[in-house]
Length: 97
Image 1 (cartoon, rainbow, N blue to C red):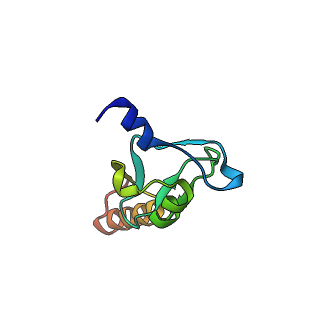
Image 2 (tube, rainbow, N blue to C red):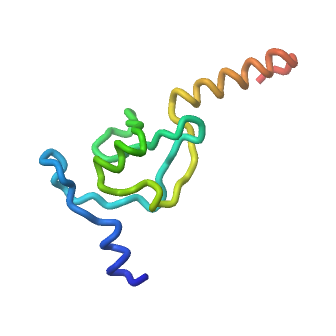
């Protein structure tokens, strides 16, 4: 694949009026490994993450998440559940964290 074809696949104009800026698809898309939500980093501040469904991501950005390499992480809700499960496990076996 040439560089021009790659750029054509990763850069597009956003269809909606509020998002007229150019959208560049990420090299890797962060997806929650538990619930499957995608972290949408466009237009959000670093301290407030926005997690959306794959369908919402596709319609908002015009990029199919299946066409972008994925990296797995935790959304805040799933991270808290995993953290509490880990704490409970260590409480049960009597080992301090």
